[in-house]
Image (cartoon, rainbow, N blue to C red; front, side):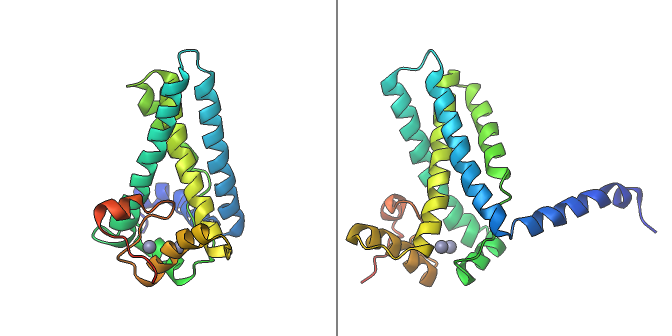
Length: 197
Ligand SMILES: [Zn+2]
Ligand SMILES: [Zn+2]
């Protein structure tokens, strides 16, 4: 016999299964990339329109957001997608097995998280700078998503672009190095950089 809790939870199980199935589709993948770009543009545009924003500080807030994101990207990939706390390892393993696959987060989740983050930042910063900082982080995340797709779908001609993409291809063969996708900065600083010979 079902407990009351199971009866209450049942419709949510259906929703969870629907979201899990949706997350594996190509449509969700592309909608996610589009929404990530959109939310970053909206945050930056609204942040810049705030009266208190000075140009130099606005640029600094944006750059700080981008830099913070690169560290988040590195940390999640190194410590949560792989080891020692493999919270997201099952989903990430699918990507290592099938780099062209579409498995990704539900398209609405990152924009919601970034809006919550922007709300949190407004508790400590003037609204304009809070939105720009969150916008920088969102722009970093959107760049990460687009870069990752481009790296696996494109054969670059420019030597610099080839070197940049090769760094992530090396990670697919050696999962203990090259955790940064958009930039090798944190791999260089934290000693996990491995260049292709
Ligand atoms: Zn990859
Ligand atoms: Zn990986």
